[in-house]
Image 1 (cartoon, rainbow, N blue to C red):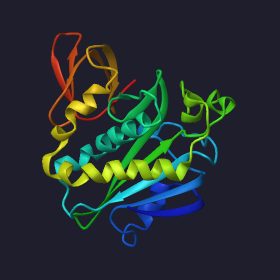
Image 2 (cartoon, one colour):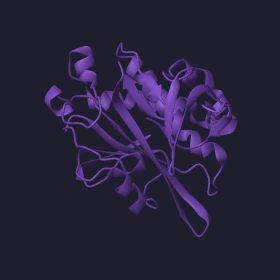
Image 3 (cartoon, one colour):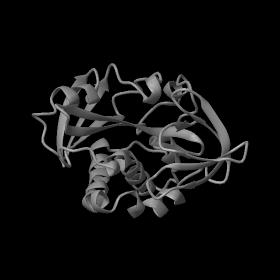
Length: 239
């Protein structure tokens, strides 16, 4: 993958969308200072320092939207976990694509599809990673959060981390497009911290509570709700 470095930008996802025609397939745009990032479901986003990763991966698998493309966030989530594991930590996934260590968030992903004239121009996977963050900054975040430097007791080389991540992603990408989520399902489930537990899932119009029974072959959450009805959720976030 090619890397495009920007010293400062309002949003790497916004930059990628505005320049989608000029940016080659398989490029990562990253910056030291993102001034106007945003999270999933319009959550508040906070800048945590220049030594962390604020990046967007641009993928152009075809000009037609295919179901498996919606699972690319889960592929990135898994390869992020595998990269963290190289540093001796045990990351867990909070469905669909937040990563936690010891119950504290360390990374999140925001995916966006860019279309024009009914054709897919590209998929943008925006991701943020707390690599080198102070405890003082983490305490200002509106949810429990951690950083890799705090977990292992030393600072992390940002470019080295990105190279490890992209290598793992590229290794699986082509086969994933062919085989779908089933290719990574078991590895994803191994790192899921919510299965067989009672959870609350936030949907655009309501919250649903129940037992997280399984992850389906296409990456959906199988939930047994309080009325003993099985719910198959393709969107939403576990709270």
